[in-house]
Amino acid sequence: MIISFCGHAAGTISDRQKDRIEAVLRRELAKAPDCKFYLGGYGAFDETCRVICKKLKEEFVKTELVFVTPYIDPDYYKLRIAREYYDSVVYPPIERVPRRLAIIKRNEWMANNSDLIIACVRYKFGGAARTLAYATRKNIPVVNVDDKYDKKGSP
Image 1: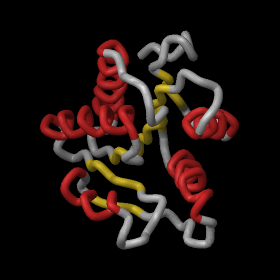
Image 2 (image 1 turned 135 degrees about the vertical axis):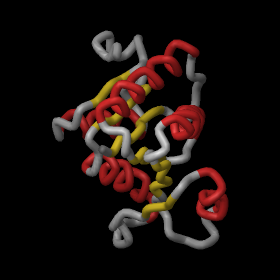
Image 3 (image 1 turned 90 degrees about the horizontal axis):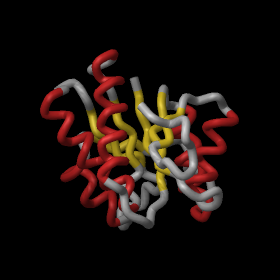
Image 4 (image 1 turned 90 degrees about the vertical axis):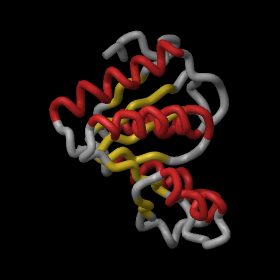
């Protein structure tokens, strides 16, 4: 199973949202303990999810934290630190995409290659909202842990 995460780069993540993320992950790991977590590494939501996944990895040892990079440039600072925080790094086949579209195409690739997306999307604008809309159009299962956007996302 592959689980990806989708959330706004800015903003705070409440304790309730953190608990919901962990509850969804525990539910899915109970069904498929050898899971890959695709993480983008941007902002508070991604960092919160990385910390939760790292914690769950202690219990579910077959899990893998994967940094999905939008850039292969060796000067890209996140690539230099990725090995410290993730188990592996994946670069999707987006090398022909203009740099200004790389994150959008990376997010679409993550969605297309996921069995589930855990989202924390409050606003209907920005990259996270665009990714959530894309996943919804593609009928990829999504759990949105933000109460103000999606009242049905409760685990």
